[in-house]
Length: 153
Image (cartoon, rainbow, N blue to C red; front, side):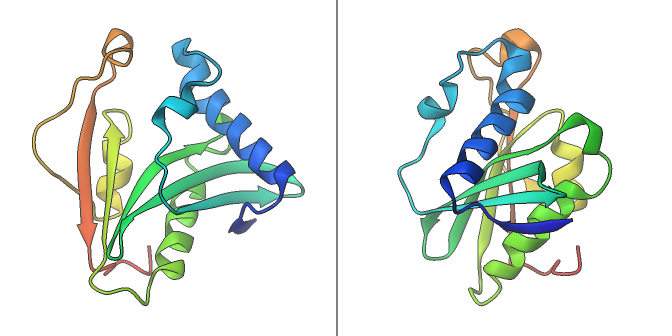
């Protein structure tokens, strides 16, 4: 498995399709929902690929010179629990390792808090209840980690 930045139009389309299939289609959201979530900030798009199959994706946005937000992370069902998400996160940490201190934040779904906790993230504030997600039993928790002390993740 290779982790790389999605740079071609085809890779970007496949990343977008994977996010739709894993994150939003099961919730019956509109196909273009990603546009409403989009931050217009510099972005890092990573994909996990094996034998020309994209298994997972991570989208992170620079919020400032020393803060990144993981905006989306998703792994196809058949590849979950196989360290794909961890490897995507590790590649993000490698790409940003020269920036210290660096804070990485995310808004984790209640179903992924355990994943982020294993990477060293800690909850920040109280949970967020967002329309459209709450009806599906999903709430969000802001989480963060600082200083990238987990390069061996």
